[in-house]
Structures are given as structure tokens and as C-alpha cells.
Length: 367
Image (tube, rainbow, N blue to C red):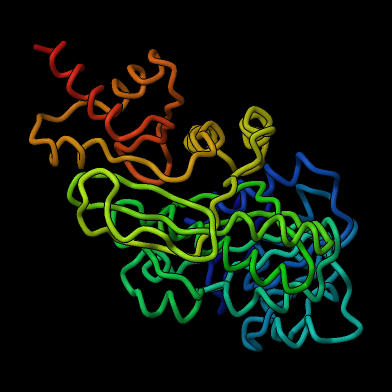
């Protein structure tokens, strides 16, 4: 059985391949095209090699190393390299940990880790083959853990309490980034998040490393906690080493607390228009992906969002379009945008009272 993305065709053999992860590959290529061409890339969990082969063909680096631990999959990986015109000696049959701890291993410009499940076991060792300016790309498919369905597992794997509510997807992404930032700091690296998103069953983050204790400490200042009140819809986030709130600021009810998590940017604010243009030129991308990237890139870097259906239910009012609320808030001088994280939700710098006021005004206008 073969599988094709753009100009790359691979044989599946005994390897797992996920067509739904195509956007992860397309988005990463689109982002990396905006940077200086990397000299060497590590595809750390290769399987069929589809990701690394596409990097080789579409990014034109000098070298891609294909790492695959499974001995039964490894021969198919090598065959796929040959069929795509790549030297099969680029493939290595080792675990990620063995590879990173080999004193002969190179330092990489791009390290891409797309495992089945959690990226947490890979983060520490990835720092050993990174250098100042390296780009780290991590995927998490353990979304049930990161997004709150398995609280204790999240504490165990990420040293963070998740959110099990409509904010769970963004909280999970921020927990994942925060965990990576804390590990990076141990190696005197700060992080710059270039692009991150929640898509279908997985979370994805692309970040750059900046070496130096000052950079590491600067990144750690973006760590903090998020709070959510289910009774009135209020949420809040604050930077710091310990949570400071136990009750809702708006109604005094008990709140849900999540963290530690990353409260810095989720994408590079300087690249939204460039990202939209870049993904339209990526070999396998389609119009649906381009629209989704546009939504990601246009979101303001404001922590968390409000669910308009949840708020109208809490208020005991009929439903109202989130786009109408966005336009009303923008007319009043607020920042407001849809979010890719959850349907019918908005990101805004307006407070809860202003959003509820907007909903009431819109319903009154509608008669």
C-alpha cells in the first residue's frame, strides 16, 4: 500500500502513517520556509519517512537524518528513501535516547519529534543535540491527558494540572509548551514560540531556542496559572510561581485552577501574512488548510477565550453569533477574533462584563 502527499510517495509496509497529520507536516514546512534554509534536520520518529522526505524535497536542506527504532519498520523506511532519491544511509535504527546520547551525534538546525502519545520523554534528550538557534518541533497526541480528561496523568507527565472544560485545548497546548520551556531552561535555553495549534486529535508546537541564562530566565517569567469559573463564565490568567486565587473575581464562586503553563505568545506576531502566503505554496496544502492557517495566524496573542454559547446559557438568553459579538466589541475599540481552538469561541481583551453587555445589546437590537 502506498501513500502520496504532494510530490512524495511512500510505501506503508509495516509502518504506521496518519493522513490526518498532513496539516502538521504542511504547516511546519510553511513555517520553516520563512526562515533561513536549515542545513540539517532530524526526523526523530520517521516510520515511513514521509515527514523527512518531504522536508528534503520541499526545504532543500543539505542533510536529513531519519531515525526509526522499530527493526521491522526500518527496511521499509530505507526503501522509501531509495524510491525518493535519498541515500538510505541517512536512516538510523536507534532509539531517540540512544541517538541523542551518542557523542558522535550532530547538532541539528531542526529537530522534529512526532511520537505516538506524549512528547514529554523526548524533550530532555532533544536539548543535547540542539544548539543556539535550533528549531524544535513537537507533536502531542495524548490530548486526553493534556486537555483534562486524565488529570493525574497530566501531573505525572507534564508536572501541571490541566483544565477539563471548554478552555482545555488551549490549556493543554500551554501546558505542553511550559513543560518544554522548563526543560530548556535547565540547558540554559530560552524559547520563542513561532507557531502552535490544536488540530483534530493532536497539538503541535514549533519553537526556536536562544542560548544563555538570561534568555532561559526570561522565558520562565512567562510561566503561570489559569483560572476558570463554571458558574458565571469568568476566566483569568496570571504569571508567577504559585497560584494566588481561590475564588472567582466576578461572582465569588469556587474556580478551576490550571498550571503551571506557558502564558507567552502562541505564535510569532510578525509572520501572519507570510504564513498565509507560505502555506498556499506548500506542495500538499489545500484551500481548507490555507483557511485554517489564516485563522491561526490572525488570532491575537491573548491567553484563552470565551465560549459565546456557554455565556448565553449562563445568562439564560437565546443564542447569538460569535461573529456579531466580535464585530460589536471591535466597534467599541476592543481586540476580538475567532479562535481555531474551539468552535463558537472568541479571543478578546474585553472583560466578562463587556462581553455580556455586547450579547445583551445585540439581542435587544434583534428585537
